[in-house]
Length: 79
Image 1 (cartoon, rainbow, N blue to C red):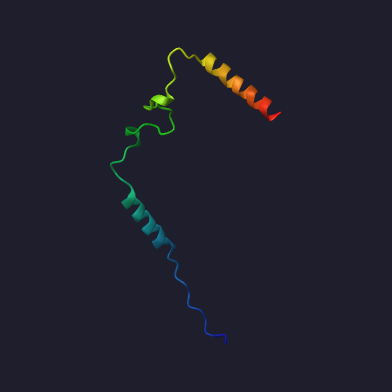
Image 2 (cartoon, rainbow, N blue to C red):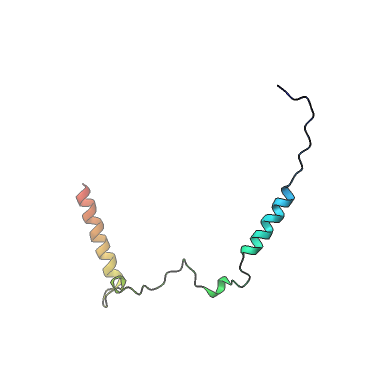
C-alpha cells in the first residue's frame, strides 16, 4: 500500500554534526602537547642491547665483504 501523502522535508543536520565533530576533536586534543619535545620516531638511534653493537675493529669494508660472501653463497645454493 502506497501512502499518497507528501513526504515531510528532511532537515539537514550536517552543520550540527560538523560542530559536534569539531567540539569533540578540540576536547581530545591536548593543548599542552608539543611534538618538538620528543625525538623523531623514524630516526635511527643507538640500541642499548649489546648484541646489536658492532665489535671493535670491524670496519664497513669487512661488513660489506661478509655480506657479499653471504650473497654469493645464497646464489650458489639456489643454482
